[in-house]
Length: 212
Length: 370
Image 1 (cartoon, chains in turn yellow, cyan):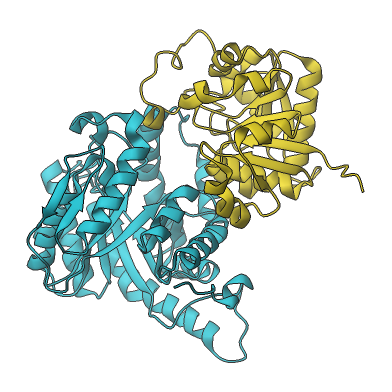
Image 2: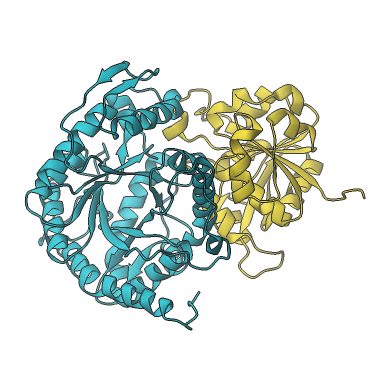
């Protein structure tokens, strides 16, 4: 019997990656998740925390789906296997977090957003920023079915309208109202130091935070 | 040897053991205000913590845990020194770090300091090891953030060896090797109670189980319920490694006053200053009152009257099946008087009420309130 479920790959099996896997399994996706080491290292974690998701190596996980979420520490973006991501819709859920990433000139550039730095490294114009501004614990606690009162919003920023809409559909599936805020550069508004960073609010309030 | 995880754990019912729950207090030595509303000095803030610990001991609170910070808003950078001061003025209270940032410390020195504390306190020293979500200690002590993971992994491994109190032979990349090194003073019990503090990284939970360390979960935002799978992960990992996993504690912030309103209005300004100061360096916007109220109402800020806090803590204890709850108190510039009163209410009203609530659950035929 063919499996008609949508597939999703998550790179990063830390706090954020695991929460996204939990939400995606709940939403009926086939979820592949990879950490920085082999699949064995995260198998128990995935089995217990995100039952239903499939632990894999990054290479295997990427081959399994057309949508890949980056949920690793931003400081490690140069370890992402970019050649495998060339044709994929890539979602950047990462933030510059100096406490762990260290002081990094390449990431603290006030001119461009960190997602543009990642896009340039990957050489993939289909990069979309999403799931980056809300704390991982709120992501898990606040996910609600479409139409629920008080449903919270997740901002989406990207340069390709079709891709933005695909990501908006994913945001909705995972339990949040998507808010399209413009091109990838507009994702700057979601970064540390901006009003929307950490925002766990509805779409109307988030719209105000990003100045729309 | 491996053992199967207790079946009752999987049913979602409270897997509480017969062991009495231990109740603690936890502080980073935030700077309180005095009777005139002025901020105390760092030295005054440290003496205030000693005073609070003496009161807590007198009132029968089980543990005082002190965390380390190396930044202007906190007075405690050397918890075991403050604990040593407390040790000589108290009788029963356990003296714990919360946490010892092991990555930027030397496991040999950590053992030496806590074994000394253990001697001064007649065996009441406890260590909670952590990676630390704050990394200000790294540049201060000459460590590189790119070694964040290897530093903790190697040092936990070495610490586990040292705690056996036998000659240590160890080689790694993060400090000089040890060849049959004897480390003194030995403790009288032969073992310093040592846990690992975890903020939500699954890898850290598995690491704690691998070395057989008790687990201390730091729940500082969002719902405590989301940690239920982490407890399960710890137990399953322990079953695979053949290590004990019966001690699971939690550390979470709170404040208690005579009424809900007084508690919220005293905690809010101090909490906001504390949050905004940390947020400023991490890029969070200033805290809004509605988000604070939401955390109090729905999530893990245990703030309110004794009854409100007791109900909330009892719910968390039931949901997670934990054996220890350390309440982080006095966050931000709070009046010293309010902190002392909080400790009194915690010991005389909240803890007895929680024990009562949990005992009601255990009565035969009574369903646990969820």
